[in-house]
Amino acid sequence: MAEYRCLNCGKIIPASELNLKAKCPYCSHKILVKVRPKVVKKVIAR
Ligand SMILES: [Zn+2]
Image (cartoon, rainbow, N blue to C red; front, side, top):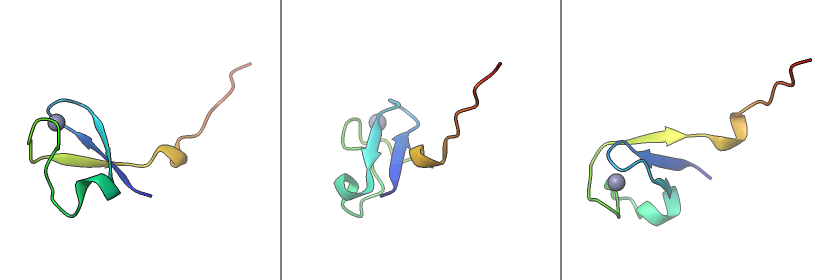
């Protein structure tokens, strides 16, 4: 599932919680960026 991060308050909002409104439920900011937490790769340094 896609998640979005509010550029104003920095909170992570799941797409299901957005309910098709491109608006932050916490601060009503309208600019959200998509985040993909499962794409993050861990690199173990030796
Ligand atoms: Zn916000």
